[in-house]
Length: 186
Image 1 (tube, rainbow, N blue to C red):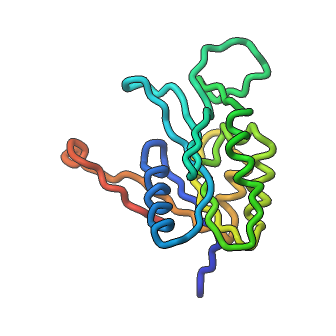
Image 2 (tube, rainbow, N blue to C red; image 1 turned 60 degrees about the horizontal axis):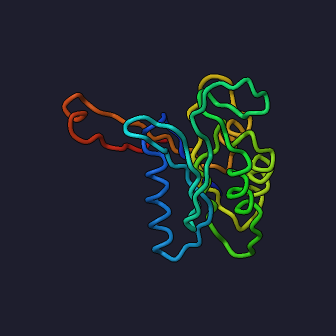
């Protein structure tokens, strides 16, 4: 039985290295001459404390995805836990990438498709459209399934033409003191 996947979704717990894996894959693909477009999400830290997330396009543009913000009572804020999503900033970078019409094969990198990104209906619609384009291969990350399901994430997780790659950390306490290996699994 031959397996025929058009897209790849990487999943695993927070901090396991999904973004690092995506960046390494993109680097290898680009070195081989494969066209890659899209973005990845980068943590923003002050010291050891995470204070937000930025979106970084593969062409080098950076914008705000979310920042830590105290509860304001503003019902128009798009919140995920302690983070407030900057929807206009996210959409200004992400939506043009999804609207790119190309007749040549290319990889569309979306790191990540998660709760914060779901506030943008344009993003959700754009992901659906990108998955249907014959010349686009989606390379994305999605969160592990827990809590309330995210409809688009579950759709991706259960799609028959998406290879779902689960990565996880496996370590002993001795290894924990040194480096911890990434181990891909299906």
